[in-house]
Image 1 (cartoon, rainbow, N blue to C red):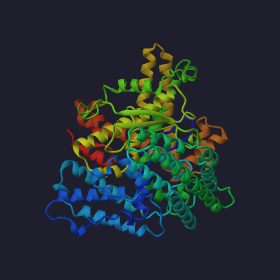
Image 2: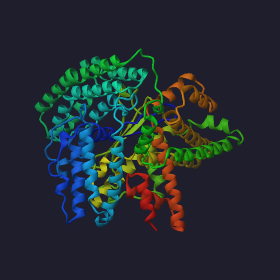
Image 3: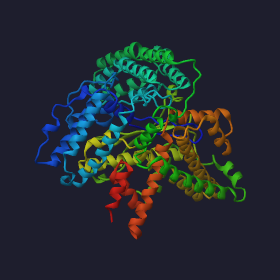
Length: 624
């Protein structure tokens, strides 16, 4: 799974594996991973607990077996989870498969309804609540055929797939052969996505010409013929590097390595590169006159209804659109007021502008060490550390390949497999992430106390408690990105404390201003997300709003509008998730009274793990 961070000035890119999970389960056909062991009729009458375990195992195994990329990124040793034999497969779209997917969802829901939740353990009851809500929401979403966009300019599979392939870990010879088998299917995979886009056009739901043109340009540039011919493409370089590790460990021979490298080069050149070109050519033919620009979902039939569903799915919030607005507007006013008060202080604007870039140019490793030290008092230790050689998991900080820098987020974290949380990677895009304060807060978002810390904590907890792996399929963007944004804002306070310790109170003051400025900016973008997609605000109206807040460059305002129009609910995933966490925090303060502490609240959130906010509220209501 990939978790990404969006910058202050550039626009966000959210690279995530759960797109594949969703598409596998609810868009693409289920025939590839039917499980004969499961049926409603086979449920035992004497044990709700065993039935629930069997159902969870079935859903998990089916989801894993139908998509080898998901399987590989979620499980290091799939045989330990009952998945010993599987054909390497990319999930290819097939026309008219929606009814089969809907039937399978109904099977799952019916099976859940036959289980008496009172007979389940506390942990099972929590998973039951999550699963039942997730399946019901997925069933509702299955009626919005062709509204999904797997080839969006900023988050589509044309940009994600190469990164997922480049980071596909080789632990065995089987991994190498699975990887090569997936490469050999990229032509079928992209052909199926093109078919989906063609059907979207027939349904009147195709994305705008300017968006399609961006995707075409990416397809032509990501797999460069010249780089492939020279052997310098990152998918060639990273493949060789991964083989070197296997060779050094004696897992493969030198002759096998040479054979694999030759096959990788051939598949990249004769299968994957033409697949990208064919996709680009096909998308180009779908365009009209090349001038249409993105607009909000409200302009589409049932667009507002779909957007409402999408916000709920991507954020995990059960609030209505009016309730979300009622939450956002006061927060925006409060943040604006705090920022206004800060800027009224003597020389405030001058100090802010002069000290924005004064944070020391520390290395990523030095920054992560500082963050770990500062978070120590208010965040729990990783569970189970006494059983491990080191309390902290392994971490590599890598740079994004130059050939992908234009399409990647400023930074992203690769979630490790469920059964191997000790090996972690954070990518830094040097083209769009400067040094200093922005790198400091970015690494807080991606590393400590952000995505890495939360993911490893959750996975170690699941291992300790023998939790249901099916929860890996239940993706909660609001929890994940809300947490990362919550701790990112906290890291501005850490940065201010760092500056104060160095005797630079002017810099500390500037960092506090920058924190509120970023808060206000993201809240504004979340409000614009709703305005564009739910209220139907045109570009001209959004441009006027941005101008009021000092964003006056026409190219910038157009990019902001187009990005939000192309990525509905993305800013809400971050910002509404953050506000929902603050709501939980307020509830915890009221409920726990004098027993409240940030450490206790953070421990509660982390122990629950990724969840929708309704289930988290219910869990909090049971605490004392």
